[in-house]
Image (cartoon, rainbow, N blue to C red):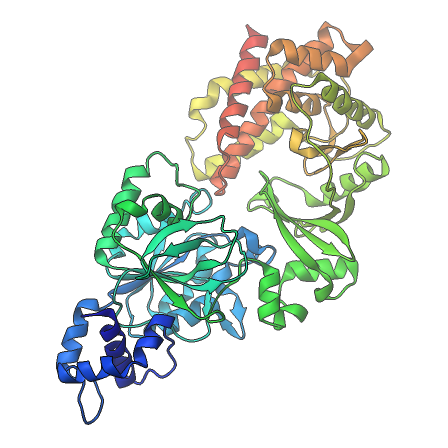
Length: 586
């Protein structure tokens, strides 16, 4: 059957089941207005001449094109959709009074697609109600935070047949789904303005011949749903299996793999809709333009927090930008009255290891001491914080001794400041406490590290009576917390681990993160101590390189037990603890 004939028969079928609210792509709409095609289908017996309805023979002709099912991708955290995505997955946002994913499920079911699988990851529990409400199935992607949606499709590989591939945050003005589809396609529209979306080139028959991300002129924008015929589904999974172990596509959308393997894949066509039929909201400000309710009342606790601090209206809070996720928290930038601020959203599990009330005290003390002028407000109950955003700065270079001098001058100033506190990091004792939290989840998780633990404990005891006095410390001195501004001034930020502690934790952690060898570590320590440098103080600060490395190693194990991915940092901290402990105790 020619595709133009298919379009006419499919339209008649939709009419026969009472589907009046569906929309058709540009090519199908053109075919529906072609009387020659209609008359030919009457002659072939596919359309009843008198009533104009599809015949039994026509229905049989459509059967090879039946859609089996749909897979909706909903695992991602949508980090570009800051700040709302911190509170719930984007697919659950209400747009014009209807949740995005629910609207899409209902549109699929209205088209006769009852077999629907949703791939979940980020805040997956928030989607579970959909099973009872709509009868959908779930697949869980536990790697959502380190792999993109290729992994989701691989996990759903047994569902991939003649299948719609959807994303949970698409919004269709009218229903684009059908019980039958002619061939594999990706939907979209012809765009005359450059966007951040993926673009396609197509030949005169609509077959996609090129896919690109960096479009600089007008072209076909890929957006919305895709349909894969069985042979395309099988070819895609074969391509994934060929590259999955290498990990080279872990951070890519599935379109990028298809782009790279386009010549090896079955044909995929572009299905063009008129602009204004398909929407995807990549950024919060885009949603505000589409749905006016988000201008005045977003129902977002984060937006409410900002409103209360600045005593402003929601529409005054604009220009949201994501900041790369830190090891402990997630942050984003926003603007009010032309000034940029940064909002910190606490990470999962941090409430068990960070005292936010003490952190707030430290932020106030650090601002008064002139070490961190950025602080605006911190909430002691929920752990969020607002600071002034510093746009122009650089992190210190671990290989630059001049940068080390700048850093150490600030640490000496901080450590000599007349600041006291009744709280503070105790790296050895705190590590033991976190070990207990870990053992509640896995009783044998620390057995293999008993030797390292004993060495660190021995070093700690050797430092207790050497005369080095406690002082007010930062506690987390790795380079992302330092800002060297163009004028040479230095700011130290993020005071979650601060308090009255051993100064060795501040000096030692910089050494740990820089992964200095012994000679470079001693040079760094000597510059910090200056006239106070001697064999006793040297040993104390070298020992604290091992002690604080061990603390962060245990901390990383705890964070991973809460679902975070600590990557190579965990191994680096363990290796530095082992290396320095063995060196000092030999």
